[in-house]
Length: 506
Ligand code: FAD
Ligand code: NAI
Image 1 (cartoon, rainbow, N blue to C red):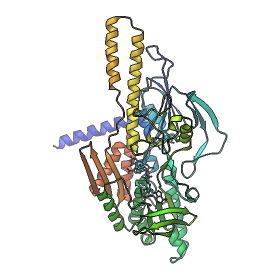
Image 2 (image 1 turned 90 degrees about the vertical axis):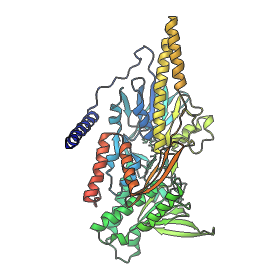
Image 3 (image 1 turned 90 degrees about the horizontal axis):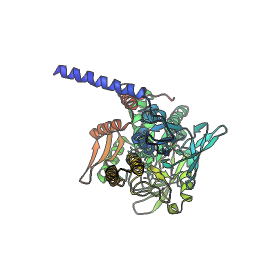
Image 4 (image 1 turned 30 degrees about the horizontal axis):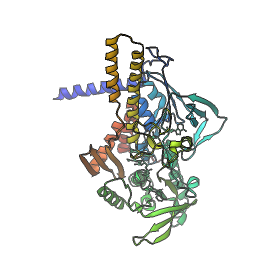
């Protein structure tokens, strides 16, 4: 009835207001202390990173049980699944960044955040060297330093290592000098700026000029989900919005996606790969598969195309804006850490961990997310589940330690028996990490998405189309951490639906 609708509307509004209020006005936290309430020493945890793994861990951890310090050069969590929507202006970068301090204030116990980069680790003495730089991001994720860095050393009882990965360039000449990446927030804004620079520059050249054509060529290398989503978003932008304000640009601008393998989105169901190819064809997006990039200079991508008969041919693809999305490589710090531990000597593609995420050969070091090499893919989904698992493991460990402490200080037989039983039960509950794959989603343009969904071992569904697109959007809204970000993202989508995407360069 009408009354019920009005009532639920008001109730929903009140709930939303309460959520917003709670997030913007965090309550008090238990302060960090040397000892726990039972008198035992409170152990400290140092978390490295503020990405999916680290923040999911922090979110679930009972921070009253440990003294927690989080160290990261990035003072915000970045919701990477929506990063490809930033260069086109569908999403404002601020909408997908959540401050680490805000997140840290939502936990029950006080958390120290240090904006710094870990530069070295000493697994024997359990220390981390950290350095604060007055930082500025270069293109990519290199942190540059304009002033004298401030350095210090932290001691840890437990180290949670979640520094993610960097971009893999495979040593291909010219990438660092000429290409942009899509890994960090600043990368996304840099891509947008480059795109606009080239469009504006092209206006000065005659229509039949080769240079004008080149400036209006947007090239993405790497047909994994990052490359596919970015190419699709840019194509949408040109057709749906730029064409309204720069008439004719849709005929002049080209978007090319170069992929070394025969297929894009190789981890998706073959039907969805074919569907993606069809959508790209309809959109007029140039898909160049079987094309291996070899070299890049300031104007061209040099690649080798493999014909179906196996013969290769050299191809040159001129570009105005170039984005490299060739996958992940390990960070220097991760390589340094691996070099210090005998058990990690064979770790080429990431750190080796056991089923409890304990670093092989590392004393009280836990590693998770893209910096590790496991049977699971390097995705946010995996890093998130690992973070939650590890926090629950630490919460249990704290209870176990408390019980052991109580057992040691108890002499009464009946109480001792009860405590020992409880301890056994708790220890039994500590089961290894098991990844539950919930599926993969990717946006492929023209309000269409592809989804490989799984419900346990028994069902996998491959979906593609406009309904999947709405599912893709609602799934991401649910996943966004705070209520503030959820509201911002939904309002960005609404703004685009009403006014279209913005055509100015910030
Ligand atoms: P990150 O999230 O990368 O976090 C690493 C953190 O460590 C950062 O805060 C960084 O600043 C910090 N750090 C780096 N060096 C240091 C240092 N020396 N000391 C201290 N801190 C340091 N996955 C999905 O499942 N679904 C998706 O839709 C999806 N979309 C994506 C879209 C894009 C454009 C990209 C790039 C990735 C996407 N991913 C997606 C993959 C997902 O983002 C990663 O798998 C995930 O971020 C890994 O989490 P992580 O915690 O290991 O690392
Ligand atoms: P990726 O590793 O998935 O894809 C990189 C692509 O670049 C590969 O297909 C590779 O063949 C290609 N490539 C490498 N070298 C090349 C060369 N020289 N020439 C041409 N092509 C070359 O990397 P991506 O897309 O950055 O993803 C990284 C991780 O993040 C993956 O695990 C992915 O699943 C995850 N992710 C998931 C998303 C989603 O679920 N929607 C979105 C984005 C990333």
